[in-house]
Length: 144
Image 1 (tube, helix red, strand yellow):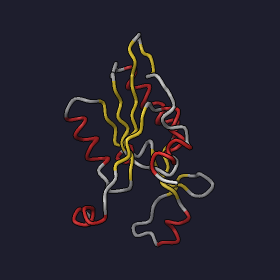
Image 2 (tube, one colour):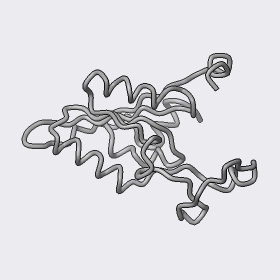
Image 3 (cartoon, helix red, strand yellow):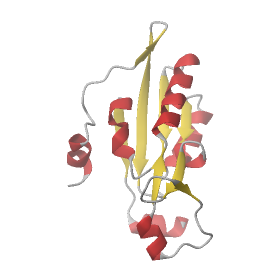
Image 4 (cartoon, one colour):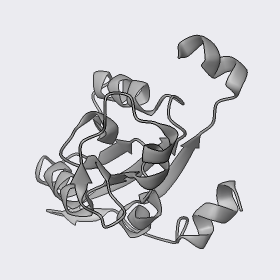
Protein backbone atom coordinates (compact mmCIF):
# COMPACT_ATOMS: atom_id res chain seq x y z
CA UNK A 1 0.00 0.00 0.00
CA UNK A 2 1.43 3.39 -1.02
CA UNK A 3 0.56 7.05 -1.31
CA UNK A 4 -3.05 8.12 -0.66
CA UNK A 5 -4.20 4.59 0.21
CA UNK A 6 -1.54 4.30 2.93
CA UNK A 7 -2.37 7.73 4.31
CA UNK A 8 -6.12 7.03 4.30
CA UNK A 9 -5.57 3.75 6.13
CA UNK A 10 -4.00 5.76 8.98
CA UNK A 11 -6.79 8.33 9.14
CA UNK A 12 -5.34 11.05 6.91
CA UNK A 13 -7.89 12.90 4.86
CA UNK A 14 -10.60 12.68 7.50
CA UNK A 15 -12.41 15.96 8.19
CA UNK A 16 -10.61 17.99 10.86
CA UNK A 17 -11.13 21.61 11.65
CA UNK A 18 -8.18 23.75 12.75
CA UNK A 19 -7.53 24.11 16.47
CA UNK A 20 -9.47 27.10 17.73
CA UNK A 21 -7.57 29.79 19.61
CA UNK A 22 -9.53 32.88 20.63
CA UNK A 23 -11.93 32.32 17.78
CA UNK A 24 -9.24 31.81 15.12
CA UNK A 25 -8.60 28.43 13.52
CA UNK A 26 -5.00 27.23 13.37
CA UNK A 27 -4.62 24.85 10.47
CA UNK A 28 -1.85 22.30 10.86
CA UNK A 29 -0.21 20.65 7.89
CA UNK A 30 2.33 17.84 7.76
CA UNK A 31 4.87 17.83 4.92
CA UNK A 32 6.60 14.48 4.77
CA UNK A 33 8.52 12.23 2.40
CA UNK A 34 11.69 10.21 2.15
CA UNK A 35 14.89 11.60 3.63
CA UNK A 36 16.33 14.13 1.23
CA UNK A 37 13.05 15.01 -0.51
CA UNK A 38 13.19 18.61 0.73
CA UNK A 39 11.10 18.85 3.90
CA UNK A 40 13.69 20.88 5.86
CA UNK A 41 14.36 23.14 2.87
CA UNK A 42 10.62 23.75 2.51
CA UNK A 43 10.35 24.55 6.25
CA UNK A 44 13.10 27.17 5.89
CA UNK A 45 11.42 28.67 2.80
CA UNK A 46 8.00 28.78 4.45
CA UNK A 47 9.49 30.43 7.56
CA UNK A 48 11.30 32.93 5.33
CA UNK A 49 7.95 33.84 3.76
CA UNK A 50 6.51 34.50 7.21
CA UNK A 51 4.73 31.20 7.84
CA UNK A 52 4.96 29.35 11.14
CA UNK A 53 7.00 26.33 9.98
CA UNK A 54 8.95 23.73 11.94
CA UNK A 55 11.53 21.31 10.62
CA UNK A 56 10.75 18.44 12.97
CA UNK A 57 13.92 16.67 11.89
CA UNK A 58 16.01 19.74 12.66
CA UNK A 59 14.88 20.03 16.28
CA UNK A 60 16.16 17.33 18.63
CA UNK A 61 13.29 17.91 21.06
CA UNK A 62 10.51 16.35 18.96
CA UNK A 63 12.57 13.60 17.34
CA UNK A 64 15.16 10.98 18.16
CA UNK A 65 16.47 7.56 17.29
CA UNK A 66 14.77 4.94 19.43
CA UNK A 67 15.40 1.34 20.36
CA UNK A 68 12.65 -1.26 19.81
CA UNK A 69 11.38 -0.58 23.36
CA UNK A 70 10.89 3.12 22.50
CA UNK A 71 13.80 4.42 24.57
CA UNK A 72 15.85 7.23 22.99
CA UNK A 73 19.34 6.18 21.94
CA UNK A 74 22.38 7.96 20.53
CA UNK A 75 23.03 7.26 16.85
CA UNK A 76 26.53 5.94 16.22
CA UNK A 77 28.73 8.13 14.01
CA UNK A 78 28.62 5.47 11.28
CA UNK A 79 25.75 3.07 12.00
CA UNK A 80 25.81 -0.23 10.17
CA UNK A 81 22.80 -1.81 8.47
CA UNK A 82 22.03 -3.99 11.50
CA UNK A 83 21.86 -0.95 13.82
CA UNK A 84 19.65 0.96 11.38
CA UNK A 85 17.33 -2.04 10.99
CA UNK A 86 16.95 -2.33 14.78
CA UNK A 87 16.22 1.36 15.47
CA UNK A 88 13.68 3.94 14.31
CA UNK A 89 13.66 7.71 13.85
CA UNK A 90 10.53 8.73 15.79
CA UNK A 91 8.76 11.90 16.79
CA UNK A 92 7.77 12.60 20.38
CA UNK A 93 4.01 13.09 20.13
CA UNK A 94 3.86 15.14 23.35
CA UNK A 95 6.47 17.57 21.99
CA UNK A 96 4.57 17.85 18.70
CA UNK A 97 1.41 18.67 20.68
CA UNK A 98 3.42 21.43 22.41
CA UNK A 99 4.53 22.81 19.03
CA UNK A 100 0.90 22.87 17.82
CA UNK A 101 -0.26 24.57 21.05
CA UNK A 102 2.58 27.11 20.76
CA UNK A 103 1.44 28.02 17.22
CA UNK A 104 -2.07 28.55 18.59
CA UNK A 105 -0.77 30.79 21.41
CA UNK A 106 1.13 32.84 18.81
CA UNK A 107 -2.09 33.24 16.78
CA UNK A 108 -0.45 31.54 13.78
CA UNK A 109 -3.23 30.86 11.27
CA UNK A 110 -1.21 28.00 9.78
CA UNK A 111 1.43 25.63 11.15
CA UNK A 112 3.63 23.61 8.82
CA UNK A 113 5.35 20.58 10.38
CA UNK A 114 7.98 19.32 7.96
CA UNK A 115 9.88 16.04 8.31
CA UNK A 116 9.68 12.28 8.33
CA UNK A 117 9.50 9.69 11.11
CA UNK A 118 8.53 6.05 11.45
CA UNK A 119 5.54 7.02 13.57
CA UNK A 120 4.25 9.77 11.26
CA UNK A 121 0.85 8.02 10.86
CA UNK A 122 0.25 8.67 14.57
CA UNK A 123 -0.08 12.36 13.64
CA UNK A 124 -3.26 11.72 11.64
CA UNK A 125 -5.57 13.24 14.24
CA UNK A 126 -3.29 16.23 14.81
CA UNK A 127 -3.13 17.61 11.27
CA UNK A 128 -5.61 18.96 8.74
CA UNK A 129 -3.77 17.66 5.66
CA UNK A 130 -0.66 15.82 4.63
CA UNK A 131 1.62 16.73 1.74
CA UNK A 132 3.87 13.95 0.52
CA UNK A 133 7.06 15.09 -1.20
CA UNK A 134 8.42 12.62 -3.70
CA UNK A 135 11.83 12.66 -5.34
CA UNK A 136 13.33 10.26 -7.84
CA UNK A 137 16.80 8.77 -7.40
CA UNK A 138 18.25 10.61 -10.38
CA UNK A 139 17.27 13.97 -8.90
CA UNK A 140 18.34 13.05 -5.37
CA UNK A 141 21.77 11.66 -6.32
CA UNK A 142 23.41 15.07 -7.04
CA UNK A 143 22.13 16.44 -3.73
CA UNK A 144 23.55 13.70 -1.51
